[in-house]
Amino acid sequence: MKIFLSIVLCTVSVLTYAQDNFKLYYEETNNGFKLLADNDEYTPVSTQINLKLENLNSSNGNSNIYVVPAKTKKYTLTELNVIDRRKRVKFGFESAYNYGDHTLKKYNKDFEYYLPFEKGATFWLSQGYNGAVSHKNENALDFKMPVGTKIHAARGGIVVDIEESYSKRCTNPECAKYNNFIVIYHDDGTFAEYTHIKKDGAKVKVGDQVKIGQLIGYSGEVGWATGPHLHFIVFRQTITDRITLKTKFLIGKGKEAIELIEKEQYTRAY
Image (cartoon, rainbow, N blue to C red; front, side, top):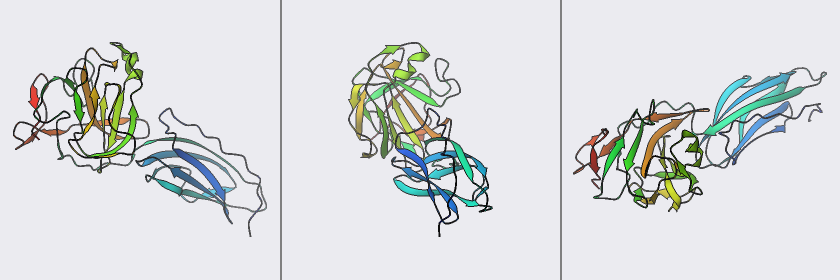
């Protein structure tokens, strides 16, 4: 038999990183409530929940981070059970959420990436990891290339985000908000972002499964850029930040994968 309770509707405070296809809500149970999540993204979503409870206990504590699997409905985060049925109950919560698995620690550090352009092509690495121009404290790579150069997937995965609507460029960091990009989610929980693609330059769409070496778009000179190039990063995602990772690439004849060095030129092996 269900209980009849007086409640206050949940208040949700969401960070700017929030995704449109993620929803938190609750359902009444015989003993109180369940806090649930729907995740319509193609990647797991991590959510941090801070509960404010009166006359209720949470089965998973009052402040936790949960990882909701991709394409999941009615995922139970916690159960809220009434302490004293003679008294009113009241609850609310604050939340923040973002792409990816916040708890991810292990990933494939030895994966052998393809260079992110077509087979046989050669380009200069104009800026490497922790580069002095715009890569301070960031494991990012800039490949100098003409606008319209074909971009190929450095690793297979599923496309989870695309922005290709902008055409504005400037050398001020504030122009980063105009960056065009493609984001691909890998099977070990990491992501790759291909940035500064040309306006309407994506050849894939969200939800596409891409193979390593596949054409995904065309390079540009859009957003925060001092010239035409492809900005490439691999990262793992937390609730509030992305942690960029060093990677190794197959070059030359493809016999060995190496970490790239700034101001060198590289040829894609396969």
